[in-house]
Length: 321
Image 1 (cartoon, one colour):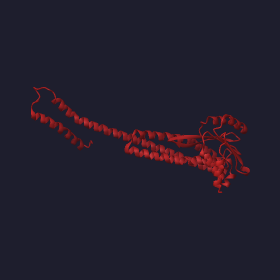
Image 2 (cartoon, rainbow, N blue to C red):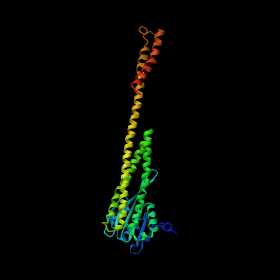
Image 3 (cartoon, rainbow, N blue to C red):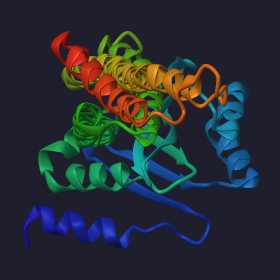
Image 4 (cartoon, helix red, strand yellow):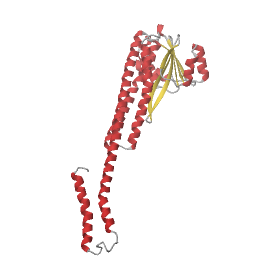
């Protein structure tokens, strides 16, 4: 059996117990560590965890709130880290928060939703025997690596939608096009709000100033920092493209309104002399109007045709339509 297949089997058998918890001994030798994974833990589980590892009340308060930006805090014996995983469902961005306690011989992960990045990171960690010597900081890196990798196809999908919005804007823009543009802008703002602090967390972990990340593993965190910086730049580029698309949409709508106004103005201008002639000729003043003159009748009808045709030819010659 291959190492990858064996790792997949172990991951599949290490499902959450009925309390939403799983515990594994990972690594080997001096780098042996304990991994505890909690899915939607209750108050009793969090209290027991706090007592067992002497976790700071402020950190536990953040765990219970689940509404924190990505950050890293040093509590002396461990690091408390908050990171975010982004997914998309039904066109909306979903932000999944992951709380982590990183110690020298343990890693604790706490989350409210199932995160595929954790199982994928575990599979990679177990799939290579050499990684067993790298400790909890490297296992945490693998989880973060999966979270980061998931952002690229998400951005590719959004980029395709921006291209579609641009094409629709130029071809035949509708109010739905404007709604889609603002929806994409909101998605990118959400992504930037999560990615920017995540980048700062990777930079802090790569600096090794906390002492919980090995110097060799710090290089991997530096790579994460570089990739998140690239993702942040892609988000900013996409926002600029959406801004240009919005400007184009407004310009197209303004030009379309101008065309409609010009057409209506031409129609009104054509009917102005016609209305005057019909109104003047329709007055029943027998003394002044040649109402019984057949020649006058045909002359008025001819003018009702000739004047609009002449005006249209004049407008066409001037290039007004």
